[in-house]
Image (cartoon, rainbow, N blue to C red; front, side, top):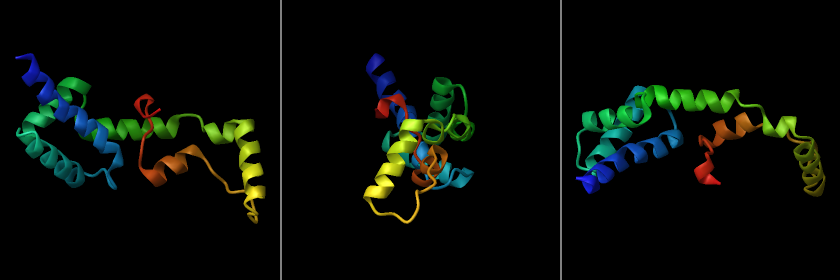
Length: 121
């Protein structure tokens, strides 16, 4: 039944959405999140794992590690963009900061533990 397939698949989508926001990405933390989501959707942890692999072609552990690596490998928008550098300098002066903060996108992503996707824009 199509409705049942969509409802069950939503568990895998929820896992993909919540994985980046975890404080740690170790086995126990990911397993706990998976158990919570599986329970909420009334499926087993193994069923959630299998759905996730079917949808994303990787297990959750490898998928999130790859996503985090992609975020770190992308060129740094702040460092490579002269307009952003000019804005940061201007904002620092307006805020009367002693020095211009050394900001980069990777640090911001790690600090907030969130991967920004097109869905977020």
